[in-house]
Length: 282
Image (cartoon, rainbow, N blue to C red):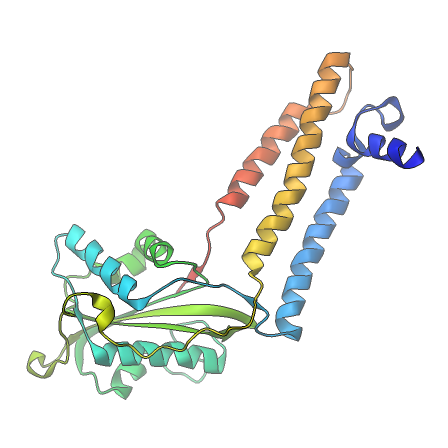
């Protein structure tokens, strides 16, 4: 009975809890925030102690990246980019280098620039560019994020580019298993010796070197954070709604702020949580 009474005080308003469920009082809200921060710390520690346990499983394919990139160019009234095996080789090398040296940037800690990767495959260009993406689940999300970023969009619809190469590589970066997507754009200095072509039929027929994902079961940190946060906010929201209904029915007067204000605040946070953007660009 004592347990039921304590649960009653935890979830329902009563004179013994000042007519407000304990769960939505400042002290318990602080505890929930502390638990959320602890969850984030555990995820961070896990990435250091057990590299590769955390990860962003993806369904990204280079062929889809190629297809959607040209779809955006056609939409903008531009000529589709030709596929270049050399640029795909340089893009894949860039992704592998980021994994090997554990960095996420256009320039490596060793001072390598994107142009070094173009030169390494002997791609002679008059103009070139690079787009990077990581921690995305699918190709549509990658392309949407690129197109929403002015600098990345500028590369995709740059009328001066004629060719493209794409690298999609899986590996462990900063303790987290992820997929890196690299786009290398270019216009050859001498078009006569260009290796570019439009892939015949299905784009997927064109081979690109790719590192296969590990078969190890991994934990998606973004999903974990969303689930933990979602459960916390859902519990608080339900308690607030119940609290508001009971208070109105009993016509209980309280000096404390209204439950309606709390509910509105939590709804906004919960909606933002649901639409948290996955992945990052560079």
